[in-house]
Length: 243
Image 1 (cartoon, helix red, strand yellow):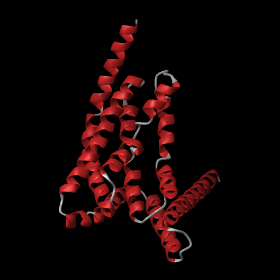
Image 2 (image 1 turned 90 degrees about the horizontal axis):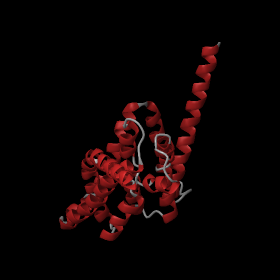
Image 3 (image 1 turned 90 degrees about the vertical axis):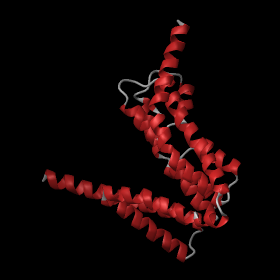
Image 4 (image 1 turned 45 degrees about the vertical axis):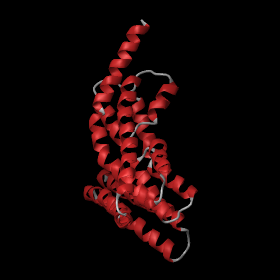
């Protein structure tokens, strides 16, 4: 009986590992760029690897690099990372409904490796997902992100110093590249981005808040206002339809 369970787990692990190959390939350029930018930001090789292996959150890591460049405090960086990654609560809760009956600690272990990409693959899989499948899926994605972050750092170390300093511009180009496609999907994102930029500018110019807190407060305040407006407009439409 135990041998059958082990064989099933091994098979599921292999299936998950194979399903994650495309994710690993997709992580290659993004992780490579992160490692390169981490070098130009001033992080050591060990710090770069630890951030990728412990934080393991692409967008949050890029934002952290930007905040570190601005001299933001540790607490503000941690809070910003929490806000950016709060969607993982929803993804984990959704995936839990699709998961097989596994011990809580087992689910907690593979929940660490859930990203937007691994969640998408697991969510569209037919039937339930087992712990073996999730561990295989998460492992190849996790290894890809960590390894290529280190490779990117080493590549950055071999570049001329002038080019390394110029790569700081690439960090802002990366944010623009992430923002523009989202803005095309709807005006809500446009309003959110513009409002956050305005609040951040006001907080910075007036010296009302430090750089880190200005970003955090601008993000939260703009998100609350936009969601409140969307809620009010939605309720008005419902009332109008009922009349």
